[in-house]
Length: 284
Image 1 (tube, one colour):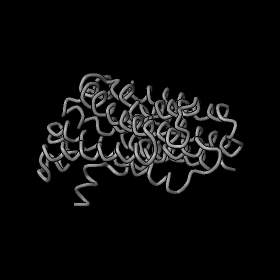
Image 2 (cartoon, one colour):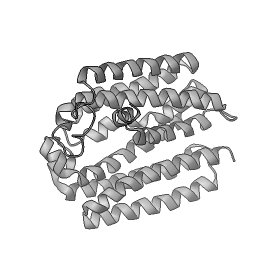
Image 3 (cartoon, one colour):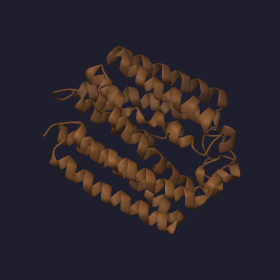
Image 4 (cartoon, helix red, strand yellow):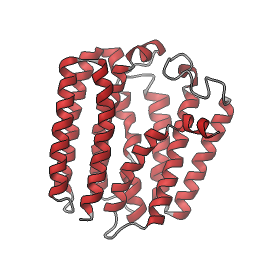
């Protein structure tokens, strides 16, 4: 049962979502968020994120069945019926919304639910099957972590929350297009119009480099957006910026699928480290 839950809910992706909630929580209060506040906010967000992935797999079950990477997921593998997966996803989403509303506040619950609705309806159902720009617009759903964190502590969404939202918005295309390069054949076989399939790898690596630049500027720009950021954040942001831009440039020059896969995983580490440094520097 635990293995089935993990396969349905993509916990490794959810961990990154939770990492982007924490900076918002620490910046959303003048003191320190209580352990109980952190725990219940992260738990509710975890459930909502899990529900979105369950519903995503329900919707994409037919395409998952023909892609090598996904054909062993629980629904195409017959470990859970589509109907039961749908009901589970809806039930978990309702539980998450109730928990966040009752134990945190309504704004936090609405932010978390909006991430689910955007991921399921905007990205999975509408954009992903139709345009190579699917991840640019549809990626909005993955940017809401900082909003959830701020809302949980301040019951408000100040400008700093939206700048962190922008940061993740600019990070998302480079991150997912790198994966799409590595999985180009799978996406092409399933008829999913990811950029490497529609426009080729050359255009994709160029776009990854452009978005890596924009993301890096937003990371450094956060130092000027919040007066609680000190030299620890600024120096860390500069070093991390150099690293990801160097990586993106190497990918642009080589167009190597193996390097694209390594860039994908490095981008996860990059955003995680940026989030952690924001948390630490906000309280030093």
